[in-house]
Amino acid sequence: MGRATGRTRTRRIPRAVLALLAAAGAAVPGTAARADDGDRPQFLIRDERVSESSGLAVSPTHKGIVYTHNDSGHGPQIYAIGPDGRTRATFTIGNAEARDWEGIAASTDRATGRGVLWIADIGDNMDGAWPDVSVYKVVEPRTMEDATLRATRYRFRYADGPRNAEGVMVDPRSGRLYIVSKEFSGGVYAAPAKLRADKVNVLRRVGPAPIMATDAAYAPDGSSFVIRTYFSASVYRSPGKLIAHVTMPPLKQAESIAYTRDGTALLTGSEGEDSPVYRVPLPASARPSPSPRPARNSARPRAVTASSEAAAEGGGLPGVPMPVLWVAVALGAIGIIAFVAYRTGR
Image (cartoon, rainbow, N blue to C red; front, top):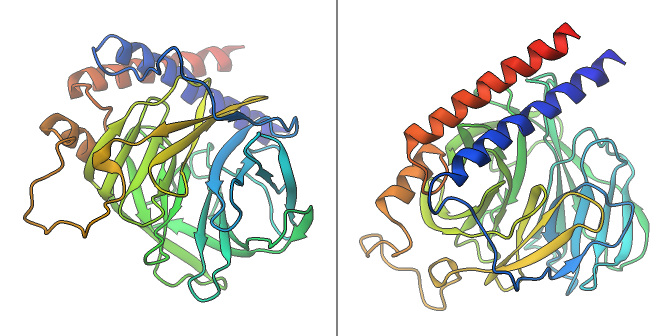
């Protein structure tokens, strides 16, 4: 009982910090992501069982199907959602534990052509309470019918200590899995090229991530990847190599992101009942190139500026000067201390 209470408290703290950061960002021109008044969701997730959608993955083999799952406190189910927002099938992962599912990714097995789903049980809101985190690998069902599936479980630990994370993605070219941590100084962590189910795999930091990253996804052709935050999304050629920032629609709690099957747009969603999923077109510089990739000494895409690349390297917010960011962080720390003191004194 005490453990559950501690978990509830720690889950509230980041939201207090988030509110302060959002207020600081709103004071700086160009930092708040806003959608046009005419923007409408692509669809609403209609299933009342999905009240905390925490990840999105577009099916590589079933046209129009998007997979999602709930956050912690729910069972080990994934939901196949159709273009109208209604559930086509519910898949229970029979040998999995839903401790704190935070993301889902999809890839294709190049040997069989079957779709593969990667369900990431990587949330850790208790400052390293878990000895390791897990990702479950499931072969995508051939038919959209309710079923119980079995998964291969891969356990992970971070080379530089425990991390809270919400983003998972798989490079379609190499098949390598990556996890993106959700921190003030977040990171992109690479899994070993060959995963072992009989031992704990070590995740190693390979680049920075924006502040408080909530999800991530690779483009279908592997030419780039996107990292979502509560505020916006950033597209990268490789870890730390920014291509563009993408304005996101306003959401209650931005938790998920995925590429469309053709790689020309992003799907992004939120927690909550009847949660909306928006389709956001990518800028030309971040779309798959119809021609061969440019040589290394070619000009950098125009979407990259000195300030935006600095933000990418430092894991900051797009357009926010670092002094402003650190003031916001300091205010957040004060808020946390006050919150803990208040709770302790009750």
